[in-house]
Length: 399
Image (cartoon, rainbow, N blue to C red; front, top):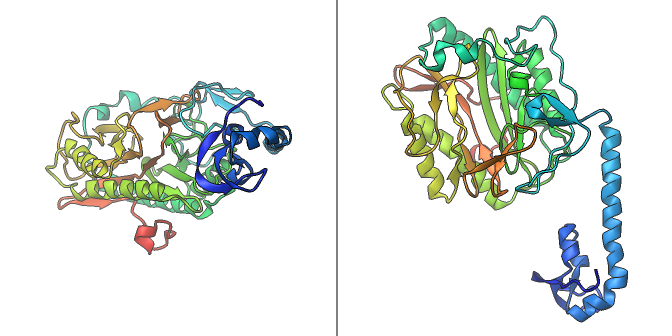
């Protein structure tokens, strides 16, 4: 409104009214995220004198937003917002004390899986039946040579699926389209996308954008230039699961985000480097925490790595933070994931109303990388490692 004050700008721009050097900005334009060039003024007097004409800029921006929303509704007719941890849908956007700029968008219907594909026991009704009550929740399994052979095949398929997703990431693509690519590549390879209907999760992969730490649900939002997005792929094939994820740059990403993603990758690499028989599981968190904190970053404590094989999640738990209480030591034949989630700000997280999406408590960005690992007699084998055919999307590796 007319009597509203304006805030000081850090940039040297020209006044909209008189073209003199301007150091003040219209607060309404800032709220609407409009270009600073059309929102700068040299004095309060120039701002007040221009108000009657300048406020039309705000109206135009609001009308444009409404048009974009109508176009979204037309493009996603029948899509709904996820509620109740995947068990509900709503036509209304949820209300929430959002921690950052990201918002949920409607999601498409759950994708179907052909009858000939071997499925885990939650595929039909969303409830795992064997996993929660297995002895392997408390005992770390030593895999047989036959199990290891199947794990290698499954994890290679998982890598190929993630690589397919990586190839389509660009500004303008929706995370739902990424999910479609993951789903179709999984089915084509003869596998089942492990997340699909796992405890009612509605999609075939997780896509975690910007301040989302993990378990982001693919939806109708288009990726924007400057975003970062983690794609987490898990596949069930030949009776066992493989699990991996990577964080990707979308277009031109700012330096701070580049450093966050690279440091997260380095945290995983340093953790993998210590894996061998006799090492305590708790040491993984010490290594990751040391590298992250040296870069001024924080380690998420709410989610951890896990055992994997015929079960999607089982013992051991692998915390990524220092001074953790993980029990046990590594032994040859064990398979588990290490998947550090590193935040630019505080480590704490909040859960969105959909019951799945975990975001940073301060709205700052988060990154993650994950591999499925096999402890060998002499060290470690990265079962989900990159292939010669993998797309060159990590600048520090592919320069």
